Image (cartoon, rainbow, N blue to C red):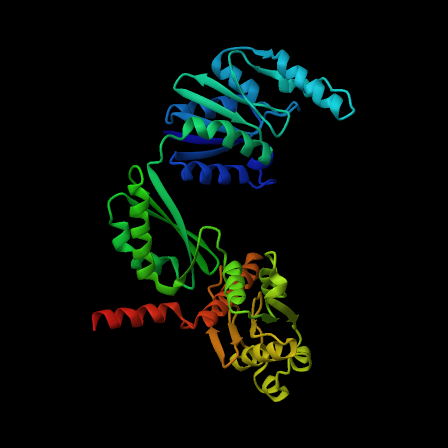
Length: 430
């Protein structure tokens, strides 16, 4: 089954609204073994929608559209599908009755414009919408079928899960799993996983984000054997990547750190300079974080680093705030002052300008544990180029590196995953 996605709306085409529906549909269909071959965005123009649907059915077995089923005059998907089918729009009496009842239950009269949602292409099937007013539509056209879904995300997802997926998805022929990694470049991962890429029926997709990469593993097969094979492939990937793999599926770094702290009855505290509280925000994102996060100090000024965190004044006077020993002192200071088991600290230059002679992207991370303090030097995080996104990207990369270093300290792992892999390779070859 080959499916194309078509999202409709000027707000999507012009960038006013992020196209979250297409992203969700792509993941959902892939998870159910449906091959999504193309995703297209078009504006609110009947002729353009007709052309896009017709072209898509020349390539795919089915098209899923989202948007354009509402009550306003720029909701034109119904009109376009009727035009593509060469049939008129007709008023569905049952839909009209439901719309009137829904309005009455809300204590208001239904407007004539709202009744447009009861107009459907003649011969179209209705897809029950248990979460809203506008039903989805199933329209048979030359070349295949079109499933038209509302643009409202929770309504779209309801119809997709309850009606469309059961029709499209046959018996599972693929198994998928996403592994989360931190600290290694995408290019490094690709080289390490070359033997996996060469396996028959196995496909890898690299999904990079600042300082971390998700690796989606797809294994083709049939029946339960496909999941067994996926398990073997995952095991080999973990052997090749070592401790760079920190989680699976929705196991984010903050959740992993929270779990490790909970298992050890330990707490963490954060001292932040360039990240401005983002590490603390990550460590308090999940329920129950009050048991593992003692608190944080956001200390941008040099005086606060000295007065609140106990960083030696002579150290600051000699080297400034951006220095590995300052990161270590900040980590120890926040650990001791807040009574935590671990202190995590970051200091550096997020940009857009150099600071005290340090280049943009220079970052130092300190992790103070019960028995020792480790200092991690990120002497130059990759800068995405001049622009407003530079600062945000560096700050996000720093958060990821800091959380990963806390994970590594909790597990007793080496600070540098690349060096760890190189050592393991030497041991295997020796």
